[in-house]
Amino acid sequence: MAKAAGDAETMSVEGAAQMFAAGVDAVTQRGKAGIGSKTMMDVLIPVASRFVELADSKAAPETVLDALPLTAEEGMLATRDMLATKGRASFLGERARGHIDPGARSSQLMIGAVCARLAQDRE
Image (cartoon, rainbow, N blue to C red; front, side, top):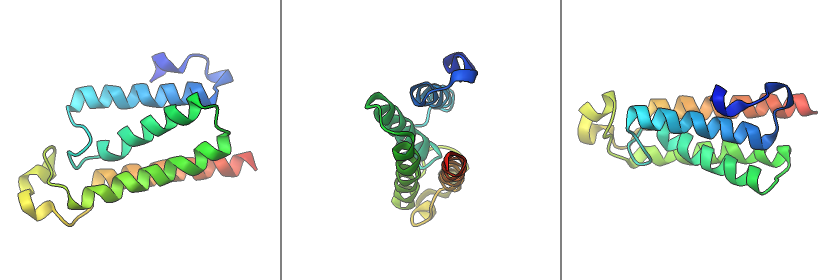
């Protein structure tokens, strides 16, 4: 993420999106988990994609801060009916169905909290 950040003094929405996406890509490569694996990646990958999409379209910061928590929540809720293929939950097999992945939930909470704080700071 630091390599993609560039100059932190003049961070733009586009720069923040690229930095976040680079971090998510690095975690994806290291953990070899993707969408549908019932992990935090079910939140982080869609949020990174949406963030880059909004930044590329020159969306206002307020729009970005409103959209990302919604995308995170959608990804988190999608884990409820998945079968875990990675991590500790994979040992549960069918018993994992019907439960939200804890990593997805914590990622969703963090994204929501960061966006809420940044929105508050903009007021």
